[in-house]
Image (cartoon, rainbow, N blue to C red; front, side, top):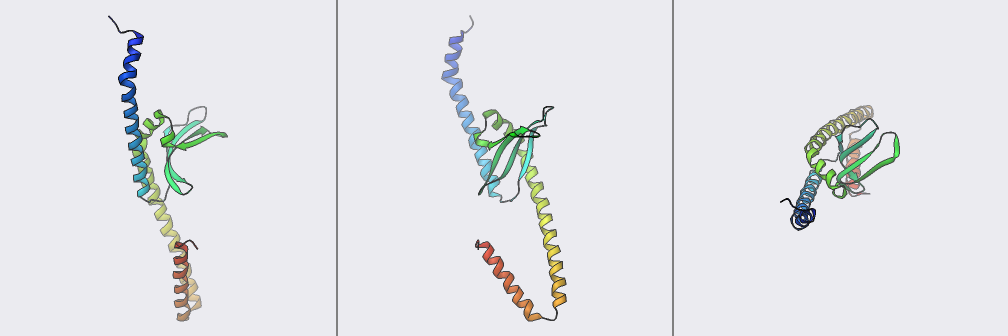
Length: 168
């Protein structure tokens, strides 16, 4: 004899419901640990990966690691291309369970994108610093032989950097 609907519902409430809640809590904990680990890397870059390609109606959904205010975190955002009012974003841990499950699948892809973004940004920053150094060298050459001025300039640079780190 097959199980009645009432019996199946009672079994689901007694065992499957708590099992799903426990599994969901484990997923949330794992995602929170991943977010903390990404933050701890201090890469200082954002990256985004698609959950799936944009569909024919222009709908898209992405997973990102980015800065919001003073903190970095994992976010899900979605929308319709060309319709800014149809876009939305929320922290991953507040997204639907299905979105969190899908995010867990593409998280390694997001980590790869973050590494690539950090490497590219490091190259850009180094190139910018080299351009500025070359310009400063030319300026110093034009001001030569003023060694005393260069010593003063080095002190001023050190002071600027010190004050910038202190937030002044």
